[in-house]
Image (cartoon, rainbow, N blue to C red; front, side):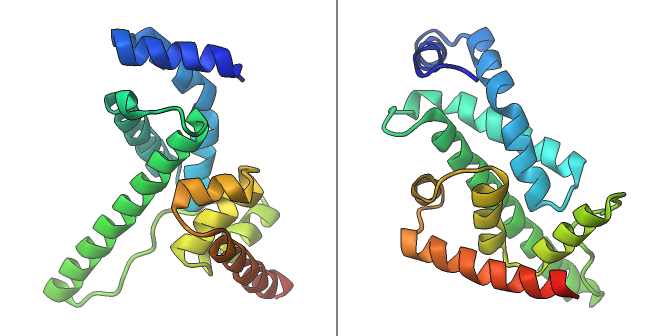
Length: 179
């Protein structure tokens, strides 16, 4: 993990000098966490997670000059990732509506969920019962270990709303996991 000073130095090199090597170092520092975030949101779809991660880093690179340093770089990056996931899901829902209007066929699942671990299958099954906002909040809080205050910055949701989503998600997931 980069120190705050090293991180700021790399960001400055990217913003002022268009230093791709410096941005590559930022990508190396955060790619595992961002990819894991997407893996949990996409129920283990590695290909989709890689695509969304790549789009996140491309958007971060092209808009690095807009980073003001008011929050941590990781918070800013997760905000981009969060927005990227919601853009993808909105686009996917629109495509499904178009397909249903044309062919009246049933919806297809989001991805291929071949998992070998029973506990991983249970968690994926439990996550599938959540709506996208609940799943995002659960992923950020429990799987990425991001505090609620930072989740408010990432999602633009009030702290109380995040706590409500976490509570509802825990209840839904507990019901699924009891079965």
